[in-house]
Length: 170
Image (cartoon, rainbow, N blue to C red; front, side, top):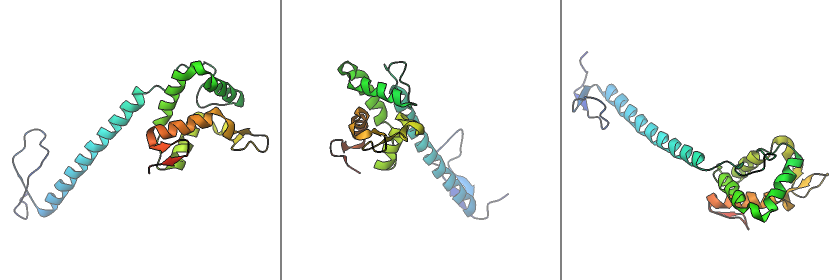
């Protein structure tokens, strides 16, 4: 079929053997241009996914050098207590730092989402329902937990925040 106009498409991506130009109609020209744009965007997305995957694979998970009894997400309050004791032990500094680095890689669209995502990685829903900020109604007080400091530091490490004041560069 002959193109209805005398347009010639010149692709920027050349896979295989291609002529310098492709004779085509105005509609075909538009379709080829859009396909090339989609391919460029797809290549960018693949590169970003590969980068994120390599970051995730290169950083050990929060269970590195952790006692066998501590597995994330924490499923019971006694496991939360064991984790709290682990965080408070000075000799566990290197493992604590790896947990911080791992949690710092957890993202989100804003401060609230990053916080929820980190907490979701640390605690199951059942455990999180047994914790609140002040410890009212016989719940565990998050404000006095070592995990609070861990959260603040891990949030600040990779998100441009001053963890002492919770000020972020968004």
